[in-house]
Length: 119
Image (cartoon, rainbow, N blue to C red; front, side, top):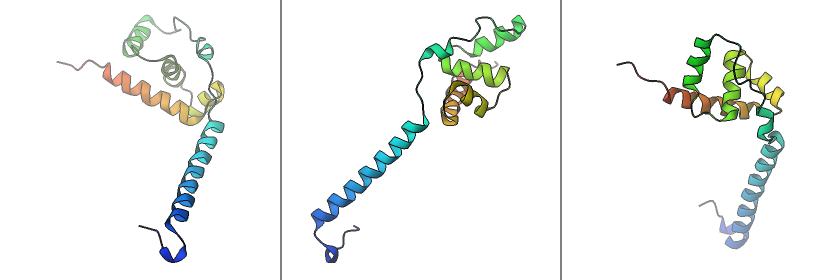
C-alpha cells in the first residue's frame, strides 16, 4: 500500500522494507539481551527453608505459594516479607527491573489462583 512506482521497482522497495524491519528487530533484540542477564538457579537457593516468622504467618504464606517457581518465591520473600522495592531486588540478583516485575506478575497470578473462595 505504501509502494510508489514513481520511486522505483517493487522488488527494490520490498527488499529495502523487509531489510529495515529485520534490522529494527535485531536492534531491539540486542538491546533486550544487553539489559537482561541470565543466571542459574543457584543464586536462588539462599532462601531459608523456615522463615523467621511465626508458624502461623509462615503456614499462611506457604499455603498461597504452592506452584510458584524459585524466582517467584524470591519475589514473595524479598518484596512482601522483607519490604524491598523492585529496584533493590533487581540489583541484588543482577537482573532488570522488568524481570523482577515478571516474577511479581507470575507470583501474584498464581497466588490469586490459590485463594480458596469463602462459601
